[in-house]
Image 1 (tube, rainbow, N blue to C red):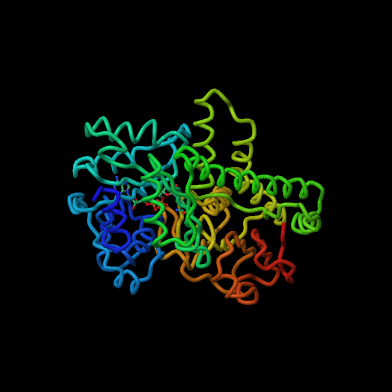
Image 2: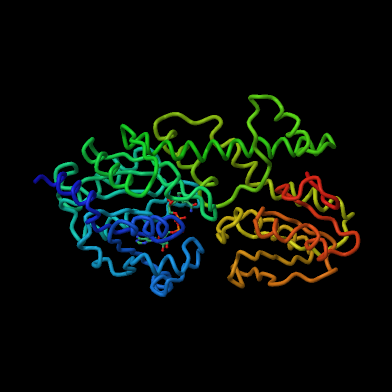
Length: 424
Ligand SMILES: NC(=O)c1ccc[n+]([C@@H]2O[C@H](COP(=O)([O-])OP(=O)(O)OC[C@H]3O[C@@H](n4cnc5c(N)ncnc54)[C@H](O)[C@@H]3O)[C@@H](O)[C@H]2O)c1
């Protein structure tokens, strides 16, 4: 039986061993989903993360203790534990450098581990977000050069961009449609069959290049769309009209695209446009619109704070800032724009209590979180993240934290059109 026939048969019989490399917000849910069908090794260089996962504790709050216990995933920070795996799925971070260029060092490090184990007859699938051409021009060449082996003959390569949305209980790994691609048609077919085991809808891309580009386009489009409505909210403010009402009016037209103003942080939407920009510039085309929204989204917290403080006539105030994460219903604080709001207010010497029930850690750098806001204490409350837990608390409970004439700024319109709320 050929290698491909063997692998197909192993996929059919759930007899494969898969290693997932990098067990963060993406990697752990990926490992968990595959563990429902296959034997899974979960590998991470972060020894602390592995120590917690071995005790079935996911500090990212993506997978529950009971589910982790049931999964049977073998967690390890020793790369040699992956030696029997036929498939490697890489989900390591892809940040940008201080000069906003792609930083691929975590992927290279992951590839080095696999090369040390040996890549003969193995399938290497990358899920991390990269720029178009990174797989073929960089990673496959690196694998070939370092191992002396040839792609599509000795080893096989695939790319499948990840769309997981941490904290989202509706769109999960299994029901978010997945794009797969391979170094050749046969490899793509194998990867398609593999993901089909755990994901409802899988689409084959004809090239790795288009699979890589598709992910960046999705996030760049979102960045631009939110930047547009953020700009509209700034203009509405100059016009002295409410952007929430104005956008609602505009959306009564059939072809208006509905987006709400808000904070754009995290490590995907704020980063991915730079990856696409980098790749396009390398090809000799400097994009005109791609980064147009970046600056605006980066500076939107400054506009919000200025608008907010304009209600207080330069006096120093006590603020309760509700929501610290970069988006709703997760505990990820990386590149959170609420943290920018906190810092700007503190620089201006206002007292700020920073409260986020989703965040279990006490500190983030020098920032200390408030466990329990005080009652009847604040001059103003800012709700910067639309956590479900705030919605459940309800406006009445939130208003009790404020003094008699406390102003509540609801940046995400969580309690739109309710008494006592200032929507922008
Ligand atoms: N978080 C999201 O919402 C999301 C969604 C879609 C795509 N992505 C993309 O997925 C990739 C991973 O993102 P994430 O949010 O899961 O990152 P993360 O920082 O949460 O997790 C990455 C993990 O990889 C580990 N790691 C780093 N280098 C390693 C190595 N060489 N070997 C083994 N482990 C290593 C880290 O210790 C960490 O635990 C990125 O490319 C990101 O852009 C993220």
